[in-house]
Image (cartoon, rainbow, N blue to C red):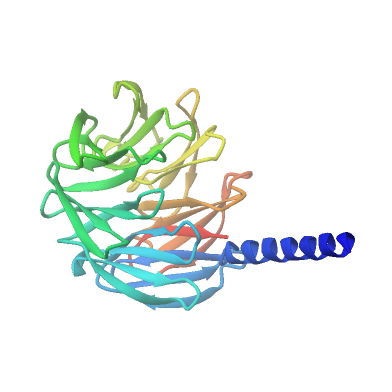
Length: 327
């Protein structure tokens, strides 16, 4: 009898694990937001065949998947909303009113709150996903853009394009606790896997500021040099880092290249030619492929990270902005 009970319990446990694994399975999609088409284009990650074009609110830009991959959040700047796409049905489920011109946003690790930058108002809006309402508006510098919540849910970092600063918000008090001067027109940010460094892309300055998250003091500054390319055309924006923190990939905007950076030495290892105005960037799960949106050539470049070469380029709507990979 005990053997039978143990066997049944084992079968039940295996079944439960299979259900959990299936619920957490990736969609196998690559999502690209298209500013001028008011849509998110969906590709099958392996073949890069087009699966669907999801109509969104006006001017979709930044995107982020929920932790379980069930929802895709999309900031729609000209509609003043965050659209919520159901990944299973590939349709917009909800539009969250978030204030004027939401540029970028991030979710708290527990997905209870959404933090969005309102570029026109110089605000960060805090929205409770549980309560379905705004719970705070925090004043920051002019034209806020990048938003990044720390993995310990203690701080929110926000870039201000006009003030040339990164603002540090305390999550509990919802107050500014630090203003860090960086380069000219800061746009995006990333945290190293150990959370000890904050990287900030300075679009007009043409540099990357590397800051200590303990002291907020500068650690390094990355510069880029491309033969035959004017310095003012080098405009770093999008960044992504490997899981082990050894490599960073940075889009260089009007320079039409992606820089490959050794994260330990802060040196550029390679420049990869992509399309016109390289902007959004994302790695796939095994980090064998890098995806780059090219806003002025209206395409998505797929890079083989081992070879350091573009292996495919696919049309991705008019002015593709951001890319999210769920493979």
